[in-house]
Image 1 (spheres, protein in one colour):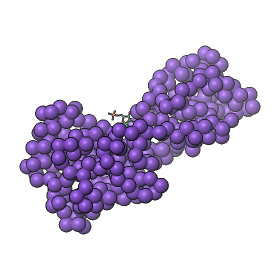
Image 2: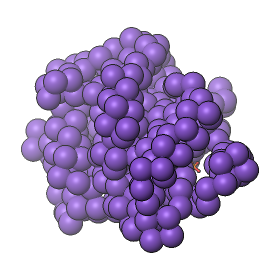
Image 3: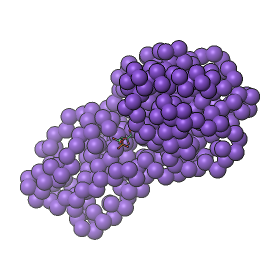
Image 4: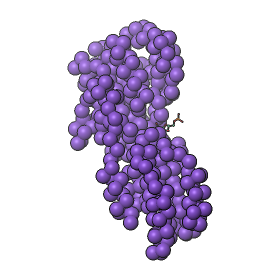
Length: 319
Ligand code: F6P
């Protein structure tokens, strides 16, 4: 193992830079040459590669986004694209690649691994939708960003005695809605993993209003969709005034929390360690505060378990 590459792909998440820094610094510490591939698999296909040194990753641990840039790359889903990437790997003589991103990115890493390239994945996505790890890089920061917004929206919701629907990201995962709903004291949490009853949402809103509650917050995961329809239905069914806030991309930016910086640093160092041990086709993760690694096949073919206990707890605590 002499030359390794690192890339970020898919949706960015706060803490990606801390992971890049950890990969680069751990590699240099272990006397490896380390290259940064720009714009995810696109950079691998087109040879967009720069050699990194200790200073390339100075002053980034606290920054959101990714200094390597990122992209969603359809070309890498074709045989031609994969062949081009393999060619660049050959030209630069990469002995191993560390790939940072979410589900789609890690599937891309598995494609390379299946073609004989030594690959290690690092889970980084705000969605927290990966089954093999207790959490992914960026989730904690996104959660805190959402909570800050919930607090502010709650102020104005109370002043006007309204209902607020707050739509959050997560793709098909309800984790951002669930955790921010529990931490923010939301009256209802609507996620793709659990069937929701419109009637019980309305009943809860009315019960709250009748006992003098001045606001109600509904956390809605984007995977369920249609905040506008839900708002209209509530207004026409029970006559309460509803406003919608779609938090969107602000959830993906900002300085990573201490938790995400530490997680990313541990993941980055572990990924380099695995390559140095001659391991490949594995993804790192965290379980009960231990850094673990898992085979791509197992990691990517397991279904993530939704935390129903937390969902029920949020219901109980918001009576
Ligand atoms: O996977 C992260 C995520 O932010 C999802 O929560 C969201 O659905 C999606 O990416 C948005 O993707 P894009 O950046 O391609 O619009």
